[in-house]
Length: 219
Image (cartoon, rainbow, N blue to C red; front, side, top):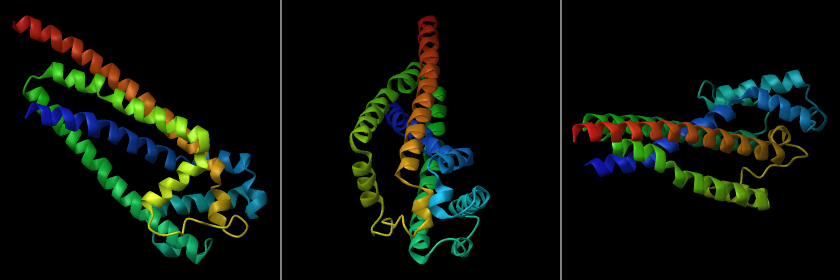
């Protein structure tokens, strides 16, 4: 039984941290505003920075489930709204997976503590994330080689239509969120995730050391 909870902890606690990193940067409006300035979105879209700020708030409310399609109709065309509907569905499942991962992680930690398997808990928290480090480094290196290629793969995997193929000449959504925006937010998500993994591993190392001390004392 212990092994099941160890495996669950190795998989789902880092997964929760990854999803939390995605959520944190997805709703970081300062990043959006800086991106609008750097990518001269006002010039390409014809929208003032204040208008872009308000539209961004609408997008946030929509993705958080606080509004329906009608909120987007004043600024986006039908194709853009349908794509955002798909994105909203993806976020819905993302939230569900995030909360499931957190609940299962907390349950696993509680069970291992109840069983007094502190060494196993420490090893899970310290050694487990190295798998995620490897995956993130590979993903990051691949993105450096051709971000657009793997960004396209992402859409082909998670969307079953081509609504995400927008026209930068006419569609506000792609004007606001060009490829440079996604490159920047991707890097920030990876960096935050690796920082959180480092903190997790530090906690795991402490638990591992303490767990060995407690085991020695019992023996």
